[in-house]
Image (cartoon, rainbow, N blue to C red; front, side, top):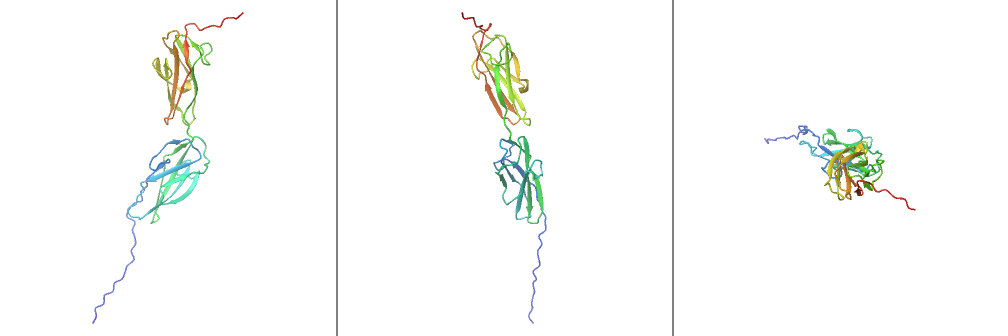
Length: 241
């Protein structure tokens, strides 16, 4: 007889042997680069990488934006398929000094998901603003002094910062020319609003002060005063008859 051999094809079931691992989500407009703050409150971008699953052929993503990690109260879930970036260009309902987070959900072809969030981006972050810095009139402590005594100089300033971004510190330099620090350099506190300087100055010498303030995100502001002439006795206007 004829020897007949029958072969039956069996169904193959893919068994999930690997693990869908979460990657890293970065706030910011450059892929793979994380930033902590931006000036804009109307747009947002995030990117992510490092989601892996050795047993799956593909990983698809969706992402959202919220005011806390894992929430989607700013931008609801958006399916981005195989993309690894999310760009939100429309007007966002985000207040200044608000931190937002991107949350990314990855899903493999076995319908297994993993979710992770960014570390947050401060929206509307503005650097410190120095309204003024000047050698003050010794008689009143305010206003710019055209003449100043040769000993103690009173320096006044005003620095404005956001509540969420306090000034990290200010440097005050005093020099005989604009931008010079040949007379004194000291660290001051922005909120103090002024300082007394004891300097040995010569009559007729010009003095300039410059204030540099930096916030916790290294945003910097610099302002320099007009020159002030040193006189042991300030000139007094006479009477014209």
